[in-house]
Amino acid sequence: MATITNKDMTAITDDEIINTEQFEDMRDLLEEDFVDLIQVYFTDCRRRITKLRQAQQEEDNANGFELAHALKGASVNLGATQMTRLGSQLQELCRERLISEQAPLIEDIAVALQRAEQDINQRLGQQ
Image (cartoon, helix red, strand yellow):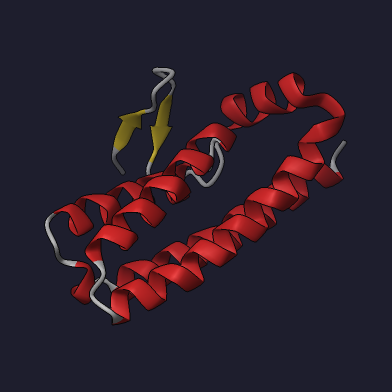
């Protein structure tokens, strides 16, 4: 199991779904707006995954790069570590003009979003 460091220098493992420290920092910062942010995050991620599938089929590396970048940025803010890591991988592969081969990675991103949603909903249920 590999350990990486996010932008805040918090150690995370690559099997971690949500970084608790980052998640709680965002929850404290946004207070009552946090649940709304989470819902927007889920909606936006699902929309971006749909568009990533289309970009992959159309071999549109530029659009794939932008979508992966946006997905990665939104995910890092919430501490969604798997989503951040996979978004970063896809972004780099789009930079290398390899989106046409990335259908499995895009599906991994969709699964990671489901895991993040389950984890976050469980955390929110414990309030």
